[in-house]
Length: 476
Image 1 (spheres, one colour):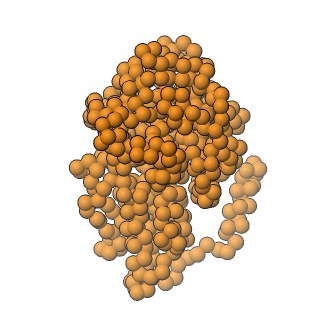
Image 2 (cartoon, one colour):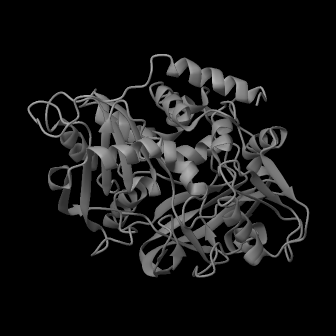
Image 3 (cartoon, one colour):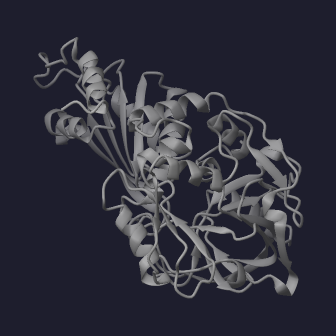
């Protein structure tokens, strides 16, 4: 099932028992963020959270942890809620091959119901803002999709970017945000500033669940996130025209904010509790001037808690980090079987592969570090054999403990790039990367005593299916 807006998805989550309405009156701080933080601590089945009784916010409706479990992630893709993780990633990869699916332009977007602009554009009057961690420098919009265009090719639909970035509310109509240099919006901003111009921008909040997924996906510069959303949805993604910028924005958003990134202007932004589980300090970052806010009547404000994993962001970006690396590697090494890069945005990745010859697994791991996504992430890469499931950490740890000779299978490569938010990088953006070859040596790499491996019995796969079926039927 393809969802055109957040509300339709929330209805499904409620029907499936995946949405928890909190009836008690709660404080905006610390209760909202603490509840979402707690959701990441109660196991894989955590529900989305709905709050509509928040002290100081008359009529506010706030949702958190919408993507914050594998059952919710499965439902976002229209899959059964009990779909296993690896099957979700494999289905994600299969739908990737349907890219591109052209979007469908629609009129009468629901966010056109209300508009404030110019001096009346006051974010505090529209959004129930609260801090996510007690060390944050202010209020953040951290699950908004930011839309920008290449100033050198404003009519090129593929070069229109849709991405998620951290955005701090600096005032009633001012925002600061952090574009990582390798991200598309940073390229757009650099081009605009070289031309001596501001960069028009649109920020959409409360989006349908697949838009939130693709906005966090590493894609090629000229690939459209809307066309990828259509592939993942199995139906064209509905878009509409933002009235001030003329940009293409999601049709079903709750709120659409339009304005400009002011050229060559920077203000102190941060600190912010990041996906790494650490605060990143205050830095001088670009500033957005808000010129127009459009919103649905009684908008639903969606936010995302992030801190020490696992939190919602790890579910949200997990598969859409795995699959791009998988596709990029398979283009050169078809032997690659699966990639698990779900850990801290892919700062650690596990790759399973067949091997052609001695040293092949190390070559695969080195290439993974230099894929478009791996350049900024993939700080630690573990390579395992094709019969080891990279999504089963028990099997991975067995491979590391039983097959690794630290003298030759652990390789450190100094002086490589990494996302500056990595707290271990020094200076920020530079790191030594680690490759662990946990595969069985093959000719001419003749060493160790691996000649008699224990294999699964031929009937094991069928028994896995039978036991799963019995368990789902309630048989004990």
